[in-house]
Length: 64
Image (cartoon, rainbow, N blue to C red; front, side):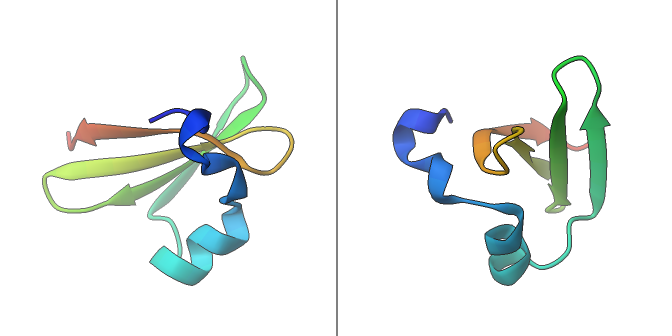
């Protein structure tokens, strides 16, 4: 899901308030973004936060 779906209003603080603490946080050095990962059983929700501290896009992946 990309930013054109109003993702720019989601910040790390909003994620914490709505979903709790992320299960994992990864720094993406090649893009200087931060990946907040929430594990939901068979899937992972990954919220990619850009330098402006708002969500740029969301990934839904099968859990490993």
